[in-house]
Image 1 (cartoon, rainbow, N blue to C red):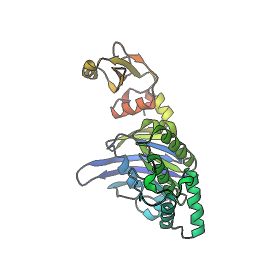
Image 2: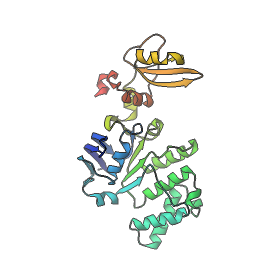
Image 3: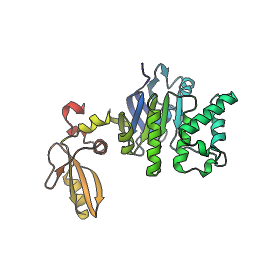
Image 4: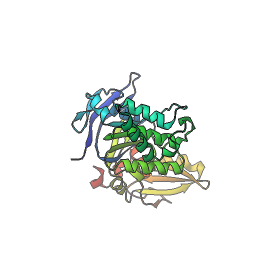
Length: 301
């Protein structure tokens, strides 16, 4: 039976009173799972909790038969983690750093460790620069190195937190391809605020905001749930605030000097609005704006 991560009513409040997680429940199967939300939504708190780096106040999480919150050593043996702020020693080569990290993960046999390091560097397309100091790596190369270290020990759960932020388009594509390859046989949680990362990669997803899961499912079904409910029109910039007050607008975008507004409603919201095909971005903005109640009843549950 494929491995599954189950999170049940997980909550976390920080000492300063910020409630970062509010009864978060998720079912995450093998494959790529996208956790989508704005900055400050609670994504990193959830990732750090699942990565055994901080405690939850209440709730539970299970990776197969492992109690994630109580049996941290067992989780760590199955875990690969690329945090949002992944630091490197700038004067150390990729090969030497990966060898050191492999040793820390328990690969004591030198010959076996050399093979593992070489194979990982080839997998992330860094073998040719294995002797280059990490300080000379581009952002995308550092992220690929981060994935290599996360894959030491053949983990069954890989967590990557905001991995494509700041990457140029070419590096993003390369990184996407790498994640897709990894996600064929293990659980990969991709935490991001970039909608296209999820739409391009993930068969399953959830949207989180202010510590609460707003919805979860597969991107195609969630997008189809807004069929016939997404409308657009252009407005002059000076009329934008009036439009926001008058219509159920969920997103705005500047196009050729005019503002394109997107509204979500079951019927045409006003003069000048034209229907458009919904996208996952529309689902995301509608969820954050609290407009999911307009969806088709069969898909809104």
